[in-house]
Image 1 (cartoon, rainbow, N blue to C red):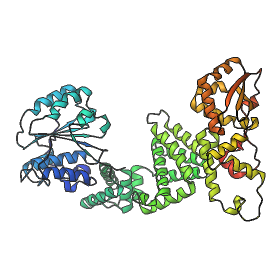
Image 2 (cartoon, one colour; image 1 turned 120 degrees about the horizontal axis):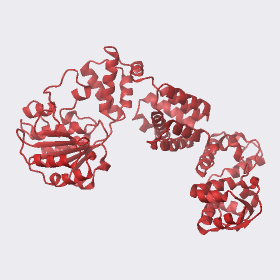
Image 3 (cartoon, rainbow, N blue to C red; image 1 turned 180 degrees about the vertical axis):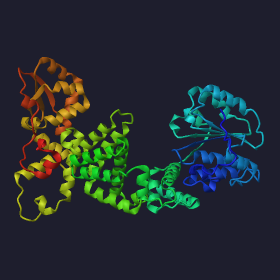
Image 4 (cartoon, rainbow, N blue to C red; image 1 turned 90 degrees about the horizontal axis):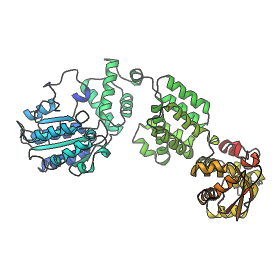
Length: 549
């Protein structure tokens, strides 16, 4: 159960993340709150019996645990917040040979029997050091029975025992354990902090590397310093004594897919599904994982949204040149398309265990670029916002509004579009719809109403497929069904309420509903091909789709 390192000194070819593990709190980068709290506790002599370190991988949890073990056991004036690093205790803990500092891997020692053995060993006093320290890594992997067996020992251990628990999934640790520990949260490191640390390590190891390569490695590490050191070492092994630059990283880690991402984004901007899908296929053929591509696209559109609402925030996360390039893309995409892409891609990324990740990504791209093929209230809302956004950006002369001052008249097509694309859904518009609700208008909105019903109840939608609008006014809507079964089923209070809600959402009024039975419902009434015929209006047609005009 106890895991000790057999070697006293680290070999020359040891991994960089082990060789450059921080020996003291002053060297622990990226976690100022943790350093300040632990150092103050040691300096004041208020080190408690149990700590819980939580946070993402590679952020320094195990390193901080070893540093704390040095602080409480340093033989030169300890306990002290700045261990000397030269006494027997400090050197043994750094080498992993201290008998009284025990590291336990909870992933492989997760049962109740191992915890019972731990409880028996805790009773013995330290052999050489001041305090006996137990570092339990990935503590969330313990079984519920093992957690229960640990409770009493964790709450009231012997005076000379210190428990340090580490986990990457704090939500899996029982509240009974959390309440017995002082908790310190390790946060994901910024690319700037990682880049500075990589530059320091490269200087110590005489590794020739360019600033752009360091920035790219820091970005790829995703907040984990250990991952960044592993990538740097992999690049050094690939290049030998040669300088590590962006081309070297492409050869070491595979061809960069940044250009593919930009090609896909450019296709999304132009609503060119052919180019976007071609770029996606080429990236996958080059070895890119569809899940990775989905995450990178989601990251890109997140940065695009940040650039639209606050460019300074984006500049703190990446180099200035990259931030300016993303800001240029975001300005061309528009806020509505960025938000739609974020919603679709986040749903794609959330499907972690999907058996067909490529299909999920292609479907997400299709929903972004081909909104006319998805007739839901959400997609229609997004398309209406896009129309408003483009109209707001158009010059006044092209809008042809009554206040443009150019003497142009507003034709019937423009007036129809102004009615079809309202700027809000307030009570004034609802009142206007209520005053003019007719059978023809309700038949034109029938597909939208069907979509609203489908979002609420698939059963009601299936029955409503066999109905059509017979008569409609602001007070009552009469629906004709093909059989008495469908009429009775739809007349139930639950189903009728669903239909009324969909009607209200589409028209702004809540009329009563009556159902009749007819011999045959004409198919053209059940699924009208279009709501209103506006003629040739290119802007609205490009966004809303020809089937809605």
